[in-house]
Image (cartoon, rainbow, N blue to C red; front, side, top):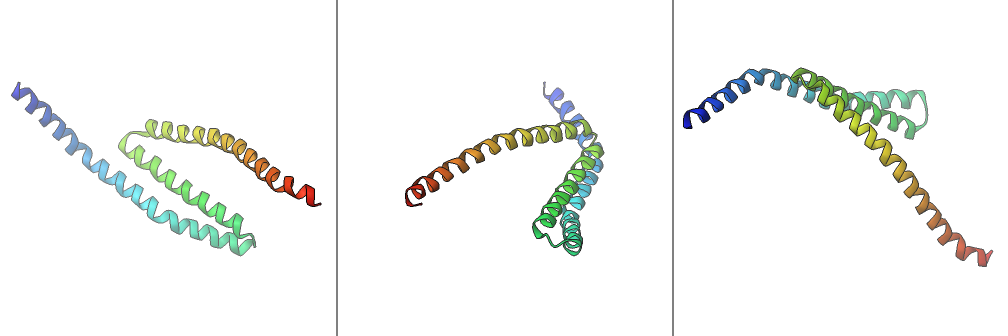
Length: 128
């Protein structure tokens, strides 16, 4: 029994040592993408601020570009580890969740707007 546990532990340790270079390179690639996503976002924001005068739009596109850069780094790191299918599933699930939450919060926001409108306009109708 003790020898079986040692064999399993030895096999696990050997597999871990074999996977370590891929794990280290995947972490380095992901950290590279995370660190440079801020610089890419600032570059996009500066270029859009130069071309347009809309600060809100340039900030929005800068954040979108930053997050797309981070997601690309995540997918590449998972590809290095051999887990590209898992990364695709995670990204698909996150996108689907974002769509569902977007529709849910759209309806909740509409309800809050109507309630505040009713609360503000209701008392003002008697004054007007």
